[in-house]
Image (cartoon, rainbow over all chains, first blue to last red):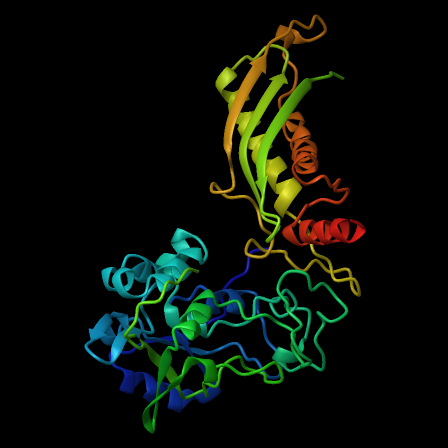
Length: 236
Length: 153
């Protein structure tokens, strides 16, 4: 079956402030778009439910130059913009010198065409890869339904049952694992300004509808990986 | 009706901790009657082996047990072998005369993929001593079988 994308508004923003403005204006109707490898798939498959709407406005953050850079702040660590592609991470000299584990994690993801498009911010904020979530006929818990179909259904590939909860999906982000190990922090921009918090507090547990604490009008702008005095051996 | 003959051999490595299977080399010898275009026949063997590797190790249609709907009806969840999964292949064509067919030519289609899963299964038995009766042989099945074998002692 040939699926077509539903119609949507596409806004190129020039700064984080502008992105926040549009997100605030459209609220739940708007979604951030950077690499589009995850979001457009969901839109094409018409994944929707009472708690998950197909976005009508896409705010493109790839046009913000600041978010596409890896900067080495002396003392404060490495700052990786949210729209840095995985291919940029793979080929980054700074990363090879300082945090080889991030480079190895980036190499594990997808295929070369996907890594050329997908961004680190998108990788951290991606939706579940669960077969029931990605199927338009199943109204699962994450879409606003009553239950998780994976409990009695097919759960061999995309699920993990670590503790009781409403959703049994396994977070598929390879970058998040490596970043949490490096005690990375995320920088979130909203209408109230910027805030910084550890990446491990960024994720929500299985009882929530969303995977991250990002609100509809918030935007992940960068990831800060702190410098270390010692240089531990790491391998992904 | 025609009968084509072929045989394949597989060399592989199994990681007994993660259950991953790494196919190192495949040798395939097939008899297609007379090979009218030998290059096409060799390509057909390559394609058949790629198909067979997916059939043996990766490709599985997942169905919801409650409704019977296919769950992985797209390419990111239905996994097919890519160029990285395909090992070095050594292909041989054996040419035979067959008086019942025009130019002695027989088929070179599906018969190139049927021996591959069997050869992979036999190679797995040779490596870890377990017979698998259920395709695809995914890492979870391999780990489970190894654990059960260790329990039995």
